[in-house]
Amino acid sequence: MPWKEASVIALRKEFVDLAKNGGNFSRLCARFGISRKTGYKWLERFEAAREEGLNDLSRRPEVSPNRITKQMEEAIIGIRVKNQSWGGRKIKRRLQNLGFADVPAASTISEVLKRNGFIDETESSKHRPFVRFERQYPNDLWQMDFKGHVACPEGRCHPLTILDDASRFSLALKACLNERRSTVQMSLVETFRRYGLPNQIITDNGPPWGNSGLSAYTKLTVWLMRLGILVSHSAPAHPQTLGKDERFHRTFKAELLGDFLPWRNEEAQRRFDSWRFSYNHHRPHEALGLEVPASCYQISNRSFPDSLPAIEYGSGDIVRKVQQNGIVHFHGREFKISKALSGQPIALRPQAQCDGIFDLYFVRQLVLTINFNDHD
Image (cartoon, rainbow, N blue to C red; front, side):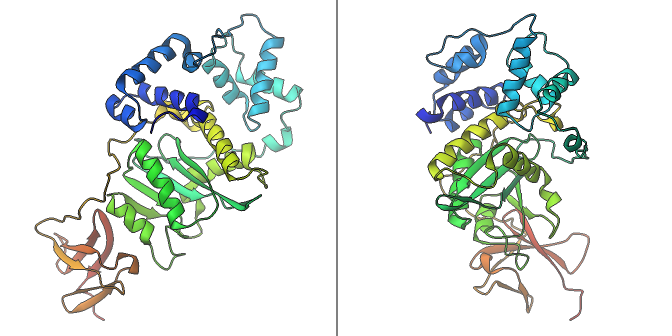
C-alpha cells in the first residue's frame, strides 16, 4: 500500500529500519507500496540527516549538546514523561539513538529520575529479571493474543496484538470492537501483506483460534494452516507460554491502555499506531541488549498469496477426506479429528520405524497420531 498521509513519517522510518537489516530490497519496497527509487531516496535522506531527513518540511539540525547539565536533565525528564515505564538504561540508549553526546551513565539517569520523583524505590525493588526463551530468527514464531478488553465510548475495545518471538517486533496492534474470526482474519491479512508469512503462530486456547480446550482447530486456524503456517496453542492455565506477548501487554497497559479508553475506535487506532511505532523504533528492549525491536527484525521471504494455494501431498501419502462430523475413516476404523477440518483432504503417513502407527497431516500440520497396535 502507498504511504498514508496520517502516518507517513512513521512508515518511512519503519521502511528505513527494516531496509537496514538486509533482505530482499525489491520485496520490501513492494510490501510498502513504493518504487525502488523512492526506497533508495529515503535511505539516502536518513543517512544524511537521520530521522529529520524523513520529514518533508523540517530542516531542524541535530541537537548534540556538549556540556549539559540542565539540558540533559530536561531531555531525560522529557523522555520519561512520554514513556512512564522506562528506566535509566532504556533512557540512556534512547538519548544515544537520538544523537546526544556525553550521555550520562544509566545509574546517573536513574538518580535524576529519583530526584524528580519518577522512581518509587519500593515499587522498583519488586521487579526481578527472569530467564527468557526465544526463537533465533525473525518470523520463525509469532505470538498472537487479545489484551482482554477495556471500556470505551463504543462499548468495549479488544486490543489484538501480534509479536515476533525473536525480535520482539510488534507486527500488529489493532483496536478491535470484537473478537470475531472475521475481525482477526482481516487484521492478519493486512499484517501478512506488509510483513509476509511466519513459519508458526502460537495462541492461547480460546476463540477464535481455539475452542476453549474442546478442539485445537477452528475455521481461523484451518485458514492459517492452508497458508502453510504451523499453529500451536499454549498449555491450558499456562499463560507464560505466551510470555513475550503477555509482557508486551503489561507495557502497553502501563504506557497507554489503562482501564478506560476515552477515544472512539478510529482515534484509539491512531494512538495505538503511534505507540506501536515508538515501541518498535524508539524503545530500547532489555532482552535485545537495549537494541530496539525494529533493528532486529526482517520481513519474511514468504509473501501472502492472492488465493489459497492448492493442497498437495506426497506420492507415498494415503489421502482421506474429513467427513462433515469431523471423522476420518481408515482401515475399517473411524477417528475423530475436528469439525473445523470437515471437507478437507488429510494425509496419513506410516511411521518408518513403527509398524501400525500413522501420522495424520493437514498441509504441514501434524494433527493426530493413530496407533493400530492399540486394542479397543
